[in-house]
Image (cartoon, rainbow, N blue to C red):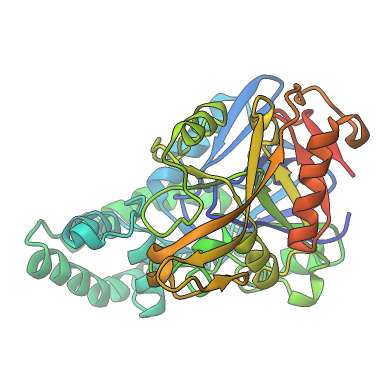
Length: 424
């Protein structure tokens, strides 16, 4: 295995956890490099379901090191709940390590996130209200707490003297709600210091040196279209989700990245607000939602569904640096007589045709998809192990996606279980 980055190539929820779980078997070191507990990953193995929010899904393999890098924001309460659940499923967590440079999501971040979203009303972003945005805002403003701050009383006291008044001001003056005392926050920090301590790797520099010549898997969260720079701004997450950030958020050099696998669904989904040109609001959309079980792992919210968007897909392959495609949920289309792919957008105002993705998302309300329609295969694919055994029309559909994205499809998922995977 080459050193590989796995990123979502749509709006997240593409099935990255299954792909990273499969690739982790051949990796020595699995690192999550961005995002927070808003990332919901589900892995099914031996008919057992595991749900991940912060912990890299590679933890299911023994003798692997799974690292939460400096680019991740960690909500201590979610972390505690997740490790307790994994322990109850007999998952060995001895290989789990946390960078002391990771940023902490605090209770006031959760409050501010929810209150801000409520205040925006019709202009809301559709966040998961997990405090991710306010945490990254504080990080960039240099007023966030790092994991390492929990382990130095003097540092923590001094940092809170600066941080707490600023966040309390927002809570009190902007949102007219409860504030936090220093004692409350210190007690919170004391509690979660004990919970995080077994996993914090203060010797992370030697850890990076140890594994820099071994097989590394970089695990991304969300998707390229939610990248704070490259996505459908402002309807995005608060971190960089593209493959280039794997180096920034892990401690490894960009020169150590060999391959970038972009994970695409055979269709498209989106959670939350924001433009979605191929969105289906009809029976086909409902069928995809039900057959694909399109409900958020973290929030339980229904995912918006649509036909495969090659305009968007070609764009994410470009800015995401995708070298190979993993195509998931092909089996959802097993009963579809006709399947569509958007190959362009058309502006309803003047008829202008867009074959490249228009990054000004405010004009997307005027765009309509230009579709090509393909015959379905009307056969079950979930038990197929070899590409050549796929129905003829399924192979045609996959090859058309390769042609449009200009990137080869190397992995095809035809079910939730690890074994329901075709390799090329």
